[in-house]
Image 1 (cartoon, rainbow, N blue to C red):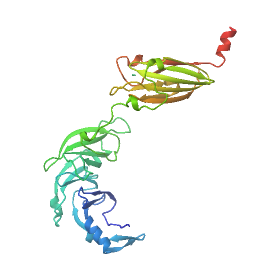
Image 2 (cartoon, rainbow, N blue to C red):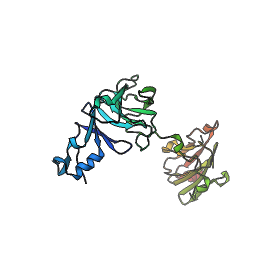
Image 3 (cartoon, rainbow, N blue to C red):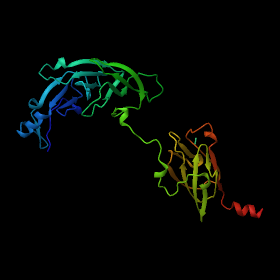
Image 4 (cartoon, protein in one colour):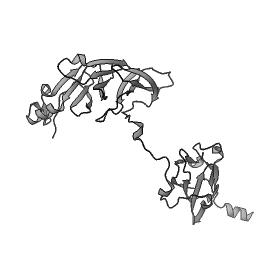
Length: 331
Ligand code: CUA
């Protein structure tokens, strides 16, 4: 079931070529990547062509399965592939990306490296468009950052990090764009835009929430004992009802529906005194539960910019103090 394969010290990424034939082993502490032939791997396994075992797992003979040691540079971590027969390896120590040819592997390994481009941080992961698929798209590569090396203005202990977009068409590489990123992004994918078909809104007809409402007139507050249940309507640019009355100690349940069926028309429901803030996508209903344990007049408001009247999209939760009614009556 399992075999070990010798590799340079501190192995990092292991990456299959798009045709499934080769595995590139990136050994962090070696100045080269090792290319294994998966066919040879299977043959060696079948013939028990091993050089001992570790923890009971047979170790395949390195020389029988390795087809090349390509001297890409210092600190190889990950390798990606394009549609032109090139591979791209990130070089952590060297802060560069190497471009090299996937064969022919005939013992002249150093001639396989065709280009190298410096990046401005210690590079970790990298991605070529479609580089993890059987049919890479090529054209672009994004090099991602592991450690910032003072690339940007110092704005505090947590430093800005970078990723860089590299044009890989032709035989060389050219940096064309740089963007800020989160610290140490662990991989990414680039796919063709025409493969993405997301919905733009949640269709009203598919909203099965029994508490969804689609007209302001259906917004209402119902009290049963000390439980206050609200059906709240939201649309540009108001909530209905605009006022929710509760008594201190009540359980309040708010079902808020964003009745929009327009692209990008999100609304929010924020209730600052109760530390509540949710976003409703177009056509979506969300339920908020709270214990009305803080008396007062608490504004709720839309927290997602929706129109010129966005800031007017608000209402109030009134929480009357315990015994308030009796006090008023007595007075
Ligand atoms: Cu709704 Cu802002």
